[in-house]
Length: 265
Image (cartoon, rainbow, N blue to C red; front, top):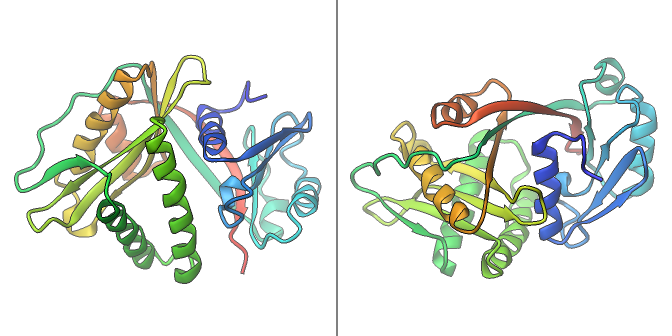
């Protein structure tokens, strides 16, 4: 069902399934649906597999039929498409680069003044929630109230995956016990080979360019490798500083995943 899709898409969908998503194969496309999180846009989407990526009208109509109450629109594609019809329909391109490694990246020294621990307690997860809300406030990417509800639901799913032993989240805390940086990693045992996918790398604005994310990459990788992961996957928006950081950490740049997206009003 996932064969031929970019590794980022395969691991995205595999993580979604662990989190409760349903995937239905319609031959030339997949419908991915997360009943517990209808506001999770890339957990409720259409992934074109062998269909025509240029046929925006067909895929947007299919999306509307599958998700009639959705305000967002999210269509994943197997390859680049002609932009015209997609842009005319009000969507924007969504392109991410996959970076992979078959070994854990070297763990760099932890900067002075920080401690690293797994996120376990309500206070730990509350700090992560606050960090995500602050980041969204900086970027203005999502409406604040809707995003808060979304992150709270995602936190429930993340904590369940941690409790089930499928995932771990790690955070770097400063001397005032404030969360400075954090990330997650999920082990996908149903993929061949067993693959670990990093999740939501986030560093607070006051703590960037100190090597915290780089250190956490190694911490999470060691955790995943001990649990059988043979390939590590991380994604970044194409051509960004994050992609360069991951390459410097030892990840090999790979394929790209393409899609079109509109958050709705």
